Length: 211
Image (cartoon, rainbow, N blue to C red; front, side):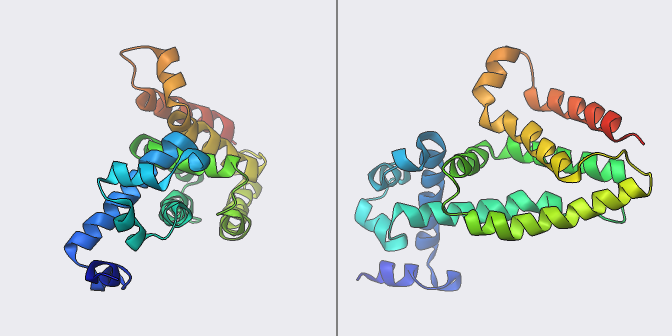
């Protein structure tokens, strides 16, 4: 094994700048290939070409395409869940829900490839995320649904199915990343889908949640 491969297997602090750069290039290439081709259509050869590395060099950092895919999903899920974690139980209810929707929409604007990667994984039955979806994600949604239900019981927002409210925010925000081509084709030139969506979602959820 070369010294590059040895150092690449160490914790982050043990990697050289070149190794950090190569690892980042592989993950970025993997994101591009997986989001465009899906997991089944992606190959290590294609990812290596996209990263401008040889396949043997890529394999020093990740032993399989599954390993690249899993690393991407782990990083993505942490970022994807943060806006829901940030929903403040002591905040003003409508403001908190609108802020959550805005943060999710901004993630779709800033990270469309990541959104499509996640969508493709779920459509495959989430083989790499099933434990997380049924564990960490389900627990977080349960916790925040409890907050929403408390606000409803206090008369601070309208009564709606709390978990389905969360699902609707996911659907209405991630759609703009996952179906970007369709959205832009229908809207035509001269439209900013995300700016228009933000205004629409504010209006929609204000009316829905008005007590």
